Length: 566
Image 1 (cartoon, one colour):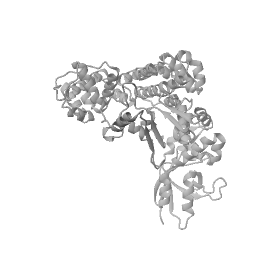
Image 2 (image 1 turned 90 degrees about the vertical axis):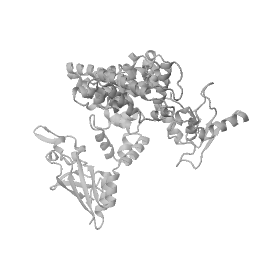
Image 3 (image 1 turned 60 degrees about the horizontal axis):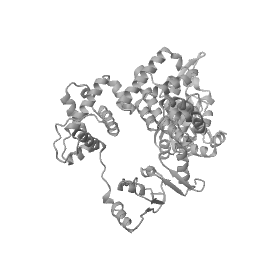
Image 4 (image 1 turned 60 degrees about the vertical axis):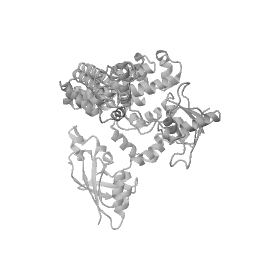
């Protein structure tokens, strides 16, 4: 059907397939896209015509009016079409009249109901055993912890939000009244407070319920820094506690086995983190939702990070994943590995930094990204993050990067320095075109605007340090050192080249994308006055080796350039 121009789009479509279908539809290759509500939630996939064949989700439930209008909003998007068509199909005239009355009158769009207000209603119903009525006095009602799965999730979300917003002094106080007052004040600023107020219900039971739970969290986690660290991970409190325990386990292991941080021990270190992450609540919930045995996660993740295709991963692990359908295996990779596991590993790294005081570096720092994208080097992660969705292509491009485990900025600088011919030679034409467009978008618009304006200051990197053999010389310069710019019109590589010198010694060149407009300005008559200074303390980037000191990260050297009109 796809080959004939008809495609599909729903939540269980593997990410790689979904990207292909979306690109094909945007490009006009696909004529019809049959979709669930995944396309009605704001995705930018405009179309000319939307057909809504039925408004029923099930025998008992119909779609909301607001969901219908969200779906209708895909048709005739601005800058894509001058008009759009939305066709709502009825079986007969009677149903047509009903649909017109319900769905074509925008005044019927349902109001947004606060999740917090909904949670309050559920907690009250569970406590009273019946629905409460508007104006009912609930002030003295004590709310119990929820037992319903959805309400539990909502309550955990409320816990972490309150923990993030309340001052540590309030969380740690032994004065229950003060904590309740603070919770009441915070809750009073929410949409829930407004909506509950329209029913004339007291907010006090929810404030008392929240204060009790937050106080219990404060007693469970007395270390303020740990609480703040858990809040930053985005996990629930229990998930944060799990990640903290995993971080402590890893810290103990690394103390006993410091050799695990050596480069040749990377597979074992990676396995240590992946296995530890499987203990985090959010990952275990995700595994249960997809019916994946937790024990199967680490082996699947290892093959995914190693770059194996989903077909090979499916053949290897279909028995332990209990699935004979490769599509389901791909969904497990997208959801449980690429999202939940990556999230858990990221949280563990953050909390581990708090425990040992040392931030993760090199491959360990990008392990969450490796897990997300299914690649095994930092450079391949960066390639994936800038839009190369084909894993094999990202890995192949990364293999050409001359730096071992580069930082993201260094990788981008390397890409920006490649010519169009270079890019076309090392990757496919489509990806080369993507990288060229990406480089154009990343071009320093501030610098170009300053050059066109004829006055102002901007910063840029120094290029060609290795080619100029100036790394040792640069290591002895300090920020603020005045530099000289010289037009190098005879440069056979780039006629717009601009040399950067210090006391007659070549240090490198202005980046090509900035040199073009700056060269035009310098060649003009009268030309503006252009001064340059070193803005990087290069000694911070230097090291001593074999009796000489040199800059080891030359691509990180920045210049400050000032332009003044004559």
